[in-house]
Image (cartoon, rainbow, N blue to C red):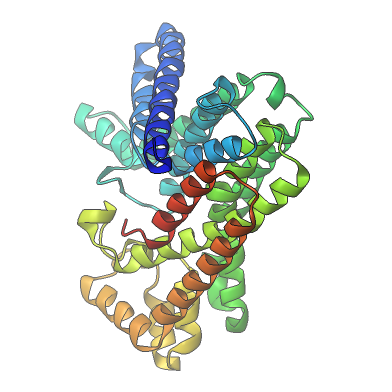
Length: 364
């Protein structure tokens, strides 16, 4: 069997095992929650919907970190860790969509929008949007709780004081810190020094996304398998720039992506007011008049399609898009160079290379 064939079979088996573990875990929690009241079923349904499918990037990074450190294929520990990461990702998506006022997720209504629609369809009292936000916050909190439960199910390797536990705890704290820096920049950015906008945006993507998308999952898998400190440092040298390239690509897609492919409206990031690296470059490189136009329109609830097209034009014409693509390429080169230095067998190294290639060049 070739390395490519072994990779395909092993990765498919792991993804199926994570899906099975999630189904099993949520089925037991469904029984517990239904015993409280069947009115809670929509919360459970929202969580199940979000953890079904998806790219499983974080779970796969964890798996190949585990395998690279000598862990056995499809072992209980790494399957359970993959499940915990998927639940944490779902919680982050629920809360992120509320924060960003995003009405869509993966081509359908976001969780808070689904609850608003539930309110409207039943003709309930008071405000449907407020109910939607409140219910989604609680759903996200419940999902966070489930993520912790799932991680604890790993056993001794994830116990208090273990390297894996420290990584898992740090990952969750950093995401919350990054989220706050993101919303702070949206409101304080226009008053802050433009010269530091790119640096602040890069710090946001590092802690809000890059570390928990690639670096921490890879290190988590390695730690569960007993990886040395040297290997974990090598994992970080590869996965952190990869995660930064991943988020920069996501930011480009948030402005220029095809809605059919991304599952989000065209220019959604502009309507949400995201001050990404792409936008920071545009504010820095465009003319004063163009920069003022972006500041005035970014995050506006009545941003028109014409406004979106004008901001896109400014981003392209001033060189901001090209500058972002250069950064993506630089981060990608750094990641692949670090990957080449990792002392891994052919299978995990090939798997990580393919994940990295798909991450940097993806179209959705």
